[in-house]
Amino acid sequence: MQINFGSYHIIPIQPKDGWNICNFAVANEDRLKSYFPKTLEQNLTPDLSNIFVIKKVKQFESKEEFLFTLRENESKKLVGLVYIKEVEWDIKQGEFAYCIDYNAKGKGVMTEAIKQLSDFAFDALGLETLQIISHKSNMGSVKVAENSNFTWVKTLKNEFTPQGGKPLNMELYELYKEIE
Image (cartoon, rainbow, N blue to C red):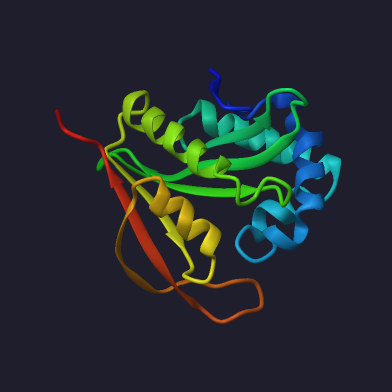
């Protein structure tokens, strides 16, 4: 499976992605440390990244969690990661989490990726509700949610605690599958 749009494409995590994910994580350490500390710590060396990739490929295959890589078409450079996580099959709901390379931020790339993967989640996975949870100060993430047609639902009190920090209130956005 490959989803193409503009100069980019999205593909599921691949067994050979360890080195690229390590490079992405290390290059974007400052961007990942607040909201993706676990992804960062699991990808600080190529060996750690290879373990991470094996785990994520298995989770994808077992439909537990879905990790996609976002890449430039020409260079094949990894410029982002998109998770569909916290999948609750009984209520047909999942949550997006995403991060983008500092060189690609603010260009609408992640917004388009979320739109494309929302269609995939509704059509191929059969989900009916998608969520994005973001801190209000993370304006890039808030813009992705809003520009991808997600609707603000409510503030979640003390929803996320950054490493070494105090619990933060987070904003919940949702998108629903259109019933035809």
